[in-house]
Amino acid sequence: MVDLGAYDAIGLGELVRRRKVSPAELLEDTIRRIEAVNPQLNAVICPLWERARAEARKRTEKGAAPGERFPGVPFLLKDLVTDMKGAPFADGSRFVHGHVSAVDSELVTRARASGLVIAGRTNTSELGVLTTAEPLLYGPTHNPWNLGLTTGGSSGGSAAAVAAGMVPMAHGNDGGGSIRIPASCCGVFGLKPTRGRNSLGPLFGDFAHGIVCEHALTRTVRDSAALLDATSGAVPGDPYVAPPPERPFLEETRRSPGRLKIAFLSRVPDGWNEETALHPDCAAAVRDAAGLCESLGHVVEEVDPAALAWPDLPRLFIIIFESFVGHSVAYWERTLGKSVTREELEPVTWDLYQAGKQITSAAYLVTWEELQRFSRKVACWYLDGGWDVLLSPTMQVPPTKLGSFDPSPDDPGKSIRIALSFVAFTRTQNITGDPAMSVPLYWNRDDVPIGVQFAAPFGAEARLFRLAAQLEKARPWAGRRPPVHCSAAP
Image (cartoon, rainbow, N blue to C red; front, side, top):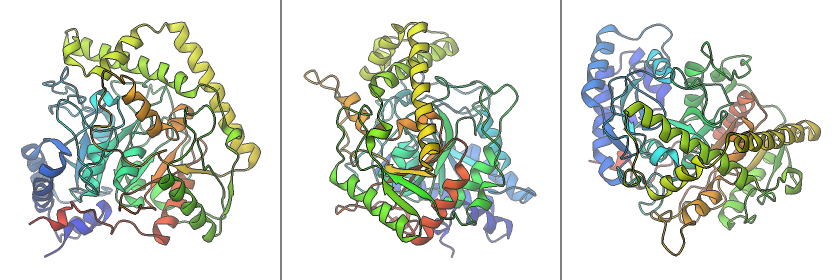
């Protein structure tokens, strides 16, 4: 008997390649794992068992094809942005529920070409609006480290599934921190790639000037690198093209990062959020990571937050985000051939949608121009200071209790205020397009994971993968299992 849950995706692919397990057997084991713990977590909201079984049977009969990195390895697709032809797709919204995708997104096409078998969809917030996976349509996803806490969002279902051992990796996308925040909350690895690294085709060129990007949450660094190798690269007509990598990202995980010059932040720079202090757990996590990096031979210095200050960053970003929500609703109205009603959207989504309709094209472009100036400041900060990496907490606060985002009549702005404390650090890389990763190096006294974020200049994923692999070796996290985990299920 082989404990398949102890393997990462590359490891499972090797087992299939060596005929130690078949894709069909691997899928059945994955379904068993999901069904064992998903009732407690509500991470997988749309099982695609029969479709996946048919695909796994074909792969069992054919065997692993040359060049497939993940032959027959089960994978989960987030219920946001990314289409899978013939499969239900709701964007986490009651308005969209019942829709079936007519095409495959480029990401799905490339994932399949790498050998992955898509077994289901994972939970997310409605239209990706909030940084928690608590949609009214499907209900909340529970954190496997503490069932009363949020998984973060919007890729919370995927993060919980990986943390609980359902699958070794699952799809996510990121428009303000939606890969990195759930990775932090659930104690897994989450990398947001450079803008344009993964195509949003064929349906989309970009989302809100490229703030949204695609990738995954993984248990190991090498899985993240290998998956990005399999899915990255522009298609004709893409509006953004990331700089080509010097070598495969997987190869980078086997190379030394060298001696990096790392700056770290111990509070939120002025203008990034109204509150600039860190929760003590987040402050402890970033100082712990700084000490670890220093022990590994890197040059680590605390940076004056004033060097990265920028006035009214939340207000500027919310203008872009409100426009993004307006675009999402308009897209679905056109696709579904019907108009949305207030009752079909959650209150926060409706309010953002209404605000988005009031933003003029001139105001939108002026806002982006201001954010592009901020991006230039960040780029010059790296160059002028000779910095290789910026280290910060992933989040300003630890994971909050489920229900914390619920608006109330006496505090209608609560949802957005909490969201701002979640995205205070992560939002920056969605503006600049830079790559960033949340690394699970720290757990607080309550055994809740507190991720730390490492960001790098545009196109520098290789640098992050080399550093991440070094950190993973120095302080392995893949073996840490939360109280709710497939290994504990009967």
